Image (cartoon, rainbow, N blue to C red; front, side):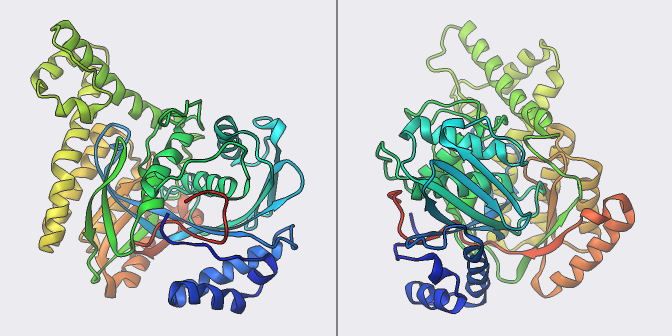
Length: 466
């Protein structure tokens, strides 16, 4: 995996920012202010780490992600356009003597310990589900770790705001355990794309290659978030497909533009209040494909059933009118047809159109395509709420070239694309307008500038053959 520096790092060394910065800069040819800030975060975490005598620790930086376009398209066999956020989850990983996973959230002052023989039984923290899910899956595939693992982490990614802090936690847990757990069964080398696909399968519970799946964390999603978090490149938007994960195109991000992220204050927890609504969007996509496969079976010319809507669209025999007629016979037929229309137009029209407008630097045209994506998300996909619709409308009225709700939806955040030199003044105006419109959400708001950043970075010696 790129950006993994195999240098030996002791906890005592990481505790001293200047010492750590010197080591990392010499191995990375510099890093500027961003690296200095990250080093400060790692050093503070090392000072809190319970194993102060660890001679070999692992430093992880796992960013959030911005879904530019591709609303609920990944698991449905489509494309999405994404990038990593500059906000991230930083962690320091080292071993300990007891057979357990210890997870310490430094920002919230919460510690969770899961004995390896009691996986799934420990509750209490809001993210216990994620820790239990990752640990159980890795043990099933690779056996019980020989080493206890302690992960001390801190995140500046807004929680449940659509930047996929939950998938970032999945990746942090998986990398920390694979890197320091010393599993008895050899772990195959995975490149970034394969690891992203595996991380997505851990979260959703899907099978990955020969590795049998399970219930996951309870959401039936895909690998988009994990792919953006792991595979992104700084100053680029990435166009990805997901069966398997593959990078289709790199789109340079204009230096003159900046994302401004506005959180709605409506928490969108995929394993909490938003789970049923999130899974309904996924279930409708599966229902559409099942209907098409039944239609093809009845004509006795079905060779291989489509696994998702993307494969269905690529079927040479695909006929939109036949599908529409089939869906009209079913309960909720209109909702199923709208789910298909949203997927088809997002994948086949909107995303290619936006990429073309970026290349032409036609920001007005880009905004028109993104407006259509937002409309479809609201009317056809049904994953928007009044607050996210208002954020988009206010952003456009305030001069943003484009704005869109992103992530799982049902709350979360909106990105707005603006001139870099105007970003800060736009941010203040946008937040003030939104707070006035939704005063009950004011205490939960976080508005900040963002830009396409690099995916996961790892420093230190690790057992995982990256």
